[in-house]
Length: 139
Image (cartoon, rainbow, N blue to C red; front, side):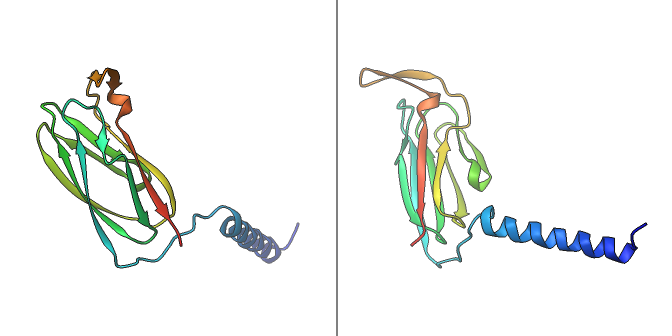
C-alpha cells in the first residue's frame, strides 16, 4: 500500500498541472478597467422589430452605461447572455443598466420577450430579427 504522503503529493502535483494547462489554453483573457464609461442608447423601434443601433463598438475594459428605450405599445426585453443581463422593457418605457467589458470578442444582444411580427418596408420582420452585436476589441 503506497504511503499516504506520496498519494497526497501526487494528487497535488496533478492539480497544479491541470491548473497550469487550463490557464495556458482555456482561461478567458480578462482585461483591466480603462476608466472609460460609454453612454449607449439602444432603441426598440416602433413596429420595426429591430434594435438601433445594431452594432456597438467599445474597448476591452470600458464600462457601457445603457439606456434602452421601448417605443412600442407592447413589451420587449433585452438580453446579453455573456454579461448575465436579461431585462424586461414594458411598453413605451425606458430602462437603464451597466456592464463592464472584461473580455474581448463579439457578443449578441437580443429581444428576450416574444413580441410578434410585422412587415417593415415590404419585408417581414419578427421577434427573432431583434438582434444586435457588441464588438469589444482588445488593443
